[in-house]
Amino acid sequence: MPAPGNTALEISIQEPLKPYTTFKIGGPARYFARVETLEALRQALEFAAERRLALFILGGGSNILVSDHGFDGLVIHVALRGIEVTAENDTGVTLRIAAGETWDGVVALAVERGWWGIENLSHIPGQAGAALVQNIGAYGAEIRDVFESAEVLEIRSGQVKSLEAAACGFAYRRSIFNSSGKGEYVILSLKLRLAKQGQANLQYPDVAAYFTQRGVTEPALPQLREAIIAIRDRKFPFPREERGGNAGSFFKNLWLTEPEYRQLERAVRAQFAPEVAAKLESLHRRRAKDGRVKIPTAFLIEACELKGYQMGRAQVNETQPLVLLNRGGASAHEVLTLARHIRQTVYARTGLMIELEPELVGFTRQELDEYLAI
Image (tube, rainbow, N blue to C red):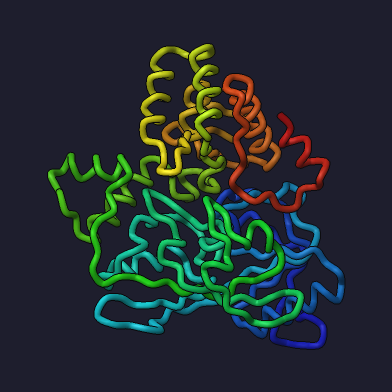
């Protein structure tokens, strides 16, 4: 239906959200609007404000899990498109990317043009705006490494603002858009600074091994993208109907201080086989410059023998247990029941509490308390 008072915006009622998510899970939105222009976005926000509706901004649907009951409010699906070069010199280019552009399409374009900086972020599903929200990272790179600024609409004031890196609060899987400023902005576009000359980032062991096996010491940009896609396809199944829906990584990795690591080490020696303790020690040797130790949550899940574990139609991926799969017709309830079992098992055997990565949409506080209980 047209939104009252204008003809530029179409509002649908009880729109199924399942097709808009890579998990292929979720009930309907009470109201739904697809916006392709700033004016349509403003009208959608006015529609929600006039009716005091809860609001959810939907991008590519790759890092969310929607309740089986759907969302009781207005879902705005951002479909702003366009990529342009806003600055260029001998060493690099600045790209302005609309929030609704497909992220992997942006990476493909950059590689095709010979622009370095985001190739290690290949094959990550979702839209460009959402990539900024969680400061996507993979294989030794993060979007903040090349980020210049973002153009946003401040919901409360209706003003368009420019936010530079310092204002975005980037950290591991974090920005102001999913923390202190959550719900305050709609991302319209982002600017990235890419280099015309670069060197392959091979610091991640899987990437280095890929080229070592092929006798390649200095991979070209297209070769690096090809490698990242091959590695991700093996570990992180790209959401496709025939391979089972998923939301990408369902759990965050852990960063431990030295005392926290020693506590984990004691638990592992008491609870697991010697080879697990040996693997843990190898992780300790690769600790970060600030002394913290990165503990891959996949390592903990595998140590707890949960790879491939299934509840109903939801399953832990057998090749990369950070990923939970919808094996066809899974419900949000099945996924979160499985996630709760994983978290409780890991906590019972290691003392570590792992966090969920996707945003949970449309759930009541009571439901969340139950699913997230340890």
